[in-house]
Length: 189
Image (cartoon, rainbow, N blue to C red; front, top):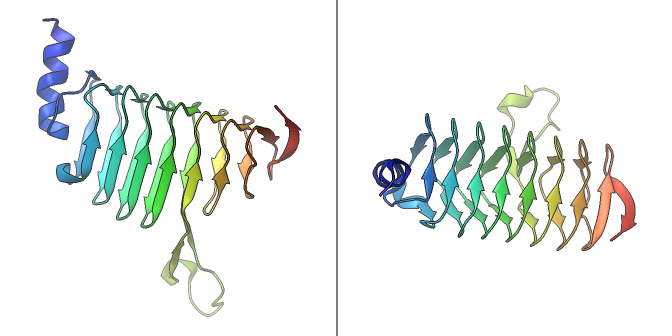
């Protein structure tokens, strides 16, 4: 047995109630362990932070890369098999659901959120207005480039590519490439 195996077994058992393939240093979990459903073949790199009381499922051989920040407040976050959450990326779930399929590659600094503040009452501070959630679906075999932002209510079709720095405000059709702010159709694959 290697030191990494023993470390992953012990820390995985403490943090996630199960052994994982790899766990880095300074991983922080402030979540209900009963709501974390991780395959034992996942890898969690250094400085990952996971918090919230919602359900988080992480599929076979998926990876959360270093310095990622995962917030699962209520609701359900599902990440399929062989998928990667990039370095310094943030996924913020505030009720509802975010579904990320299989073989999804997420570069660094990607931000995904399914929540937004209401802002229609001009007599009330925005921070005191309701938070509105809209589900997000990212289908299988999607590539999300560095620094992309995925906003509430978005669906990204199978095999699509989101270019680096894009702000996705509209649904993305399968097998298409989008880019820009706001993200626009560039071409089909």
